[in-house]
Length: 85
Image (tube, rainbow, N blue to C red; front, side, top):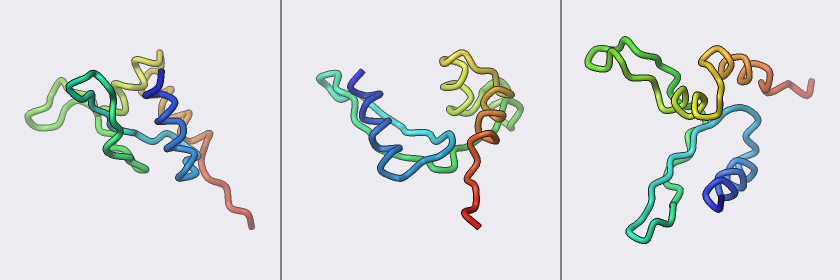
């Protein structure tokens, strides 16, 4: 749960308003460290040369949350930044 709280805090620090990807890894003691914040995460799906059956990390994370790829894209579109003009 601490890792999720840290990710939520990191997203708030950069004023994220749509889906982002934060990469984390566990250290030797099992404590997770955030090491990369992707404001524009890779959204490729399977079918790339050499990765015919591999989704991007964003799609894998969305699926773990119960979302389909379409659900993820729709959530991103619904959360788009709006101009203050």
